[in-house]
Image (cartoon, rainbow, N blue to C red):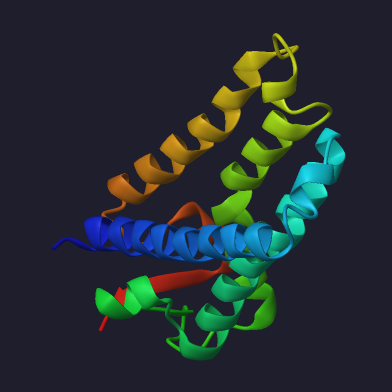
Length: 167
């Protein structure tokens, strides 16, 4: 499988894997606490803070920790990929943070656009529903860049001065 496809599959595998775990934990917490805090979150900013703490923070922690310490996420491990510095060594915390920030930017923007100031499901019509196109355009841009350089360097690699290599 080409490096481009391997990287996409590795990423989507991890996102789906983590999503299942976090959604399961959210449902379990809902059941155990009889709906607390879920049933009490009304305003968009309250929900956004909850999403940041209970979803985003664990995902960010996962990517930063595994890429910095192990040089691979579960998806990279399955597809025999490793993230590294240009010289082949382990990446540092700031590189892992930069990679994660850029990689997850569309996801975080989506949360903010849909939740703040009011959740879209609680109003008749969002002020500017076309804002949701921004994270989607960014995602397409990420994929296009990765495709045109045959998977060698993603946008997050450019900024973090890292690369992903087959092992």
